[in-house]
Length: 131
Image (tube, rainbow, N blue to C red; front, side, top):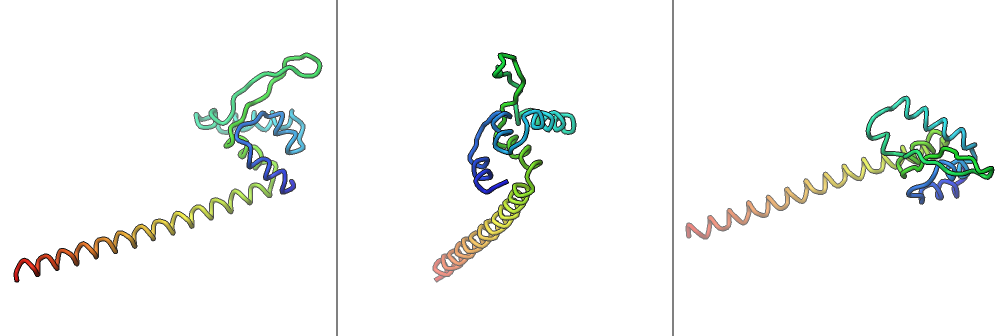
């Protein structure tokens, strides 16, 4: 999958399984099968919120099934098709974990400085009180 396709996928907020099939160069029936298998393997409330079954009329006038996907559902499905995207997701999670740890340490340091300042002010107040 080329970088421009990854960028295109990243910019999608909601899309249909037909559009996804076109973007990842897969047959729509393959994408439908992937979604069906995911539904069988992980049948929980969170999974059901990732896509909704819908219908569309094809070129022959027949009513066909498709899914409307949230961004999370889209990324879940695409990550099954793209090793590049799966790696990007893993790298992003690593970055977010490091950033969270950095923020936690910074908050701890700020709290310690604030407590130190308050303690020192309290000591000064005590000194002035006993003068």
